[in-house]
Image 1: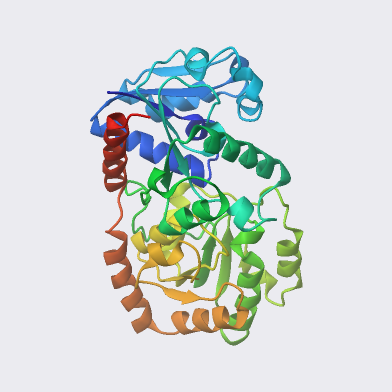
Image 2: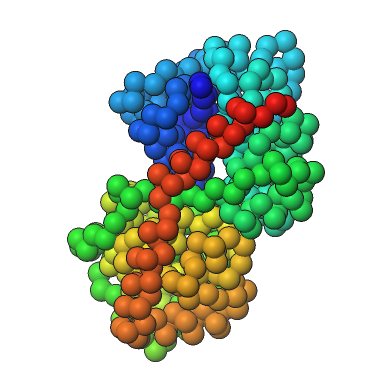
Length: 382
């Protein structure tokens, strides 16, 4: 069986976010396992972006055929159906696979010879309007229309994501398979090396993008409650802004009486990330919506107690190993933050439970379930 994996989001950005990490980790794991014959596809119009170099760095060692399309801009392919009127995706990418796996809905073409699988990470642009940029909303709406017309098999990151898909689309339930994600076990592990280049002393940690759905303003407001009584505790907000340029986050920091103890290092390397997790008193992730929530697993893997929200997919990821809060209740978040940082027994309990919980997830398990789906799809006549 020949499987074509769409690698656009793995290679298309020098500083990948969640979808890029998903595509990279899944593709690398599938290639390592070698159960099927694989080929990769991606676009880089006139080689302007440099995707070839990133593709070689990420996947070159696996000796997998990689098909780079230099004649078509990915941004056009993802929104203009007419580019597939006279030329199929197979022709654009010079591939002829049995199954094509697209890592996000916005990548799917309107004309394809072969069976199609698409990963849906969430339907947040419809479930939580305003949390996604107008441009991204348009792209996702176009993609959802393409998916509903073509009726491929769908991989959902979580049961919560599956429920969203069923609620906001006409995709039949029998076409949707829930396959959990994981974290990068090779790079995310307990590492108590110094983080003095970023922060010294005790601190509470958030890792993620600065966007409204991540609830960063409430984290700062809750921290203000904690900082009043805990004079040495700092807050590290590791990440960078996205499309919505959340000026309210920076205004909230500047208006905090403890702004000198709030640290914003920006985008961090994976080495910095694991050290920050490993040395933090606790990790706070009260997101308003998540398709999965990989940072929760990352924190557990580094031996960091977790406080997260009780919504969407987060209880599926956190199990009984985290403290849950209402994402809209700032006082509850502040109370639990203070509870965790001042109780070594509670921290040790959460750390122990976290190690057990994170062991339920691995990219090998994810890849095995994906491989099973490839086999099942090949047996289907549709």
